[in-house]
Length: 233
Figure 1 (cartoon, rainbow, N blue to C red):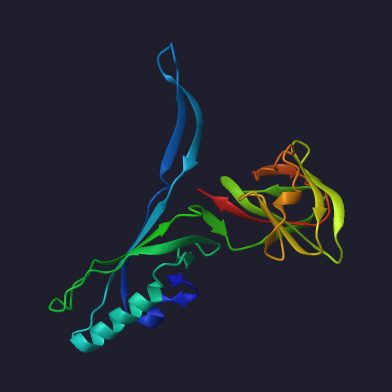
Figure 2: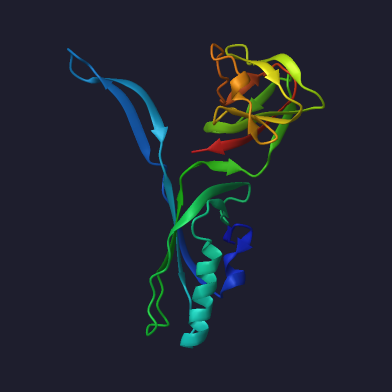
């Protein structure tokens, strides 16, 4: 089962999957060179992109039918879009990626194998849980995984409210005003919108933005619902 954008590859063409290769995330170390002593000060590791290569065969001797199948595969790839990719080895997780290489194939060698489609994860290179977890603000919860979760704070206001804050006990975010409508605070992207329009002009810049993290005994105080998806390297 290889599903991309909610469409199964084998429903598009009678391909024979030979291999699926998932590369590790590219690790980008950040360090500061010491001015006097040898060596450098380690700061952090940031995650880069990840590639997924699907190798397959298309055993169709008729050139016209073969080309019809290949065109279907090219359409299935939906070039230019990052979509959810589901692989058979990971039933509870998915990757978010875009197709960056289409198969290079021969019209003569209809029996050829090792046709390849390459996907690349850009925005979210981690394995991401299919399950969206929800807890009310003020409730203690645990986030599993080996990478920071995707996390938002959401609420719906029937009228505008003033002087609202959210705190995890370490950092506190303060908004002088939140208009009426559906609010979404994206803790990963550090954005806040109501009905799709930014409300960051109401954010107090001296506040401390809450950082999504893994671990137990987490509690975000405020009004609304915390929604998150666990992730793994």
